[in-house]
Length: 337
Image 1 (cartoon, rainbow, N blue to C red):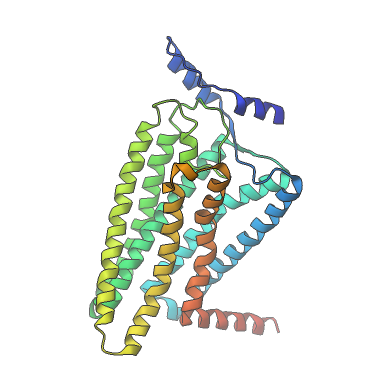
Image 2 (cartoon, helix red, strand yellow):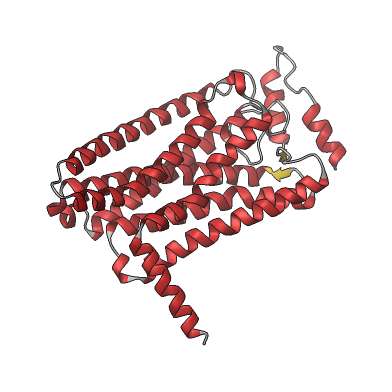
């Protein structure tokens, strides 16, 4: 099986051919691919096992952190407010995001394999694009929540009632689904003629496009460009919201009031900065410094680091979360005594 994989990935299936039937040959090539080969995390067996245990530790930490925040928000009635409702949605998205990429990478490292089925690759692309888009949309909604809470506190209950919050959260999830459907359907409708080796530890749209035939990827590039424009619009909205927030906070006469306002914004701002910086660097870094090893490290930054650190950022700066978690642990210990 390994020999077969090597032969497939090493073949130059895109040898220039402009004669009749070239398009038919390319499409047949695309439909004949039944699996992809992911990038190996290490060359030696010892390093592969080390990576497995490291990834397992990170994955369990992310599951624990996001699971605790989700449970605390769901069970503590004092946290049933718009800010914590959106935080619950963020934790669920983080759980899904890290569960889309790491389990397969851990399995490949443990069993010394690289393959992923065609359907599994398509599922990874769909879920990752969906969760990443939904998370960015949700972070945009959360910036609006902070804007209303600080700049229009008297209208907070009206503008962010339970129905409005549910609608905005549903819009964020729906945006993710729509974006993911468009990108996944378009990407996997392209003829693939550059083999089946993906230069990443999970299936990612830019890496799949590298396998497509010459000029056939331009439609997906156009769709990505449109998505970037939409994301840039969300970024402008976030920046304008925080400009208004900082202006309102600086006009507060009480130092205690300014500190409280900043403390409610800093976790969201830190999570947003971590998310944007890792994603932007991963996809907009100069080609001159690009290499498979660097791409692998950078991909870990935006697929693994934010879902793992987000619960820590929110719990460190939020007394309500820490108090709810403390009560939950005390109740659990009391029940087992």
